Length: 93
Image (tube, rainbow, N blue to C red; front, side, top):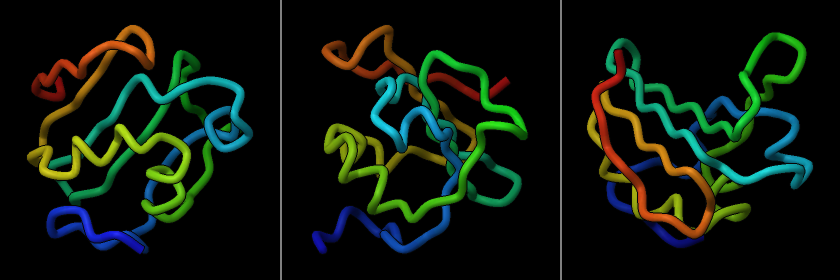
């Protein structure tokens, strides 16, 4: 398993069933300031019916471009309109 930055690749992260089933690409990444948790989602809004907890390395396996965001500071988010565009970084509101 390749090491990215100082992230524990076995860390539990939040994502959606659509992402894990390959029914969409990751468009939104949140690194929450409160507890350092991560969330990865696509165009669908995560809710209780479609949220999953997986290991960070599973997300990177799905989309290796996520590795570019491993130094994303807590309290920040990254987003893009499609999987071929660059990430835009912003504060989580």
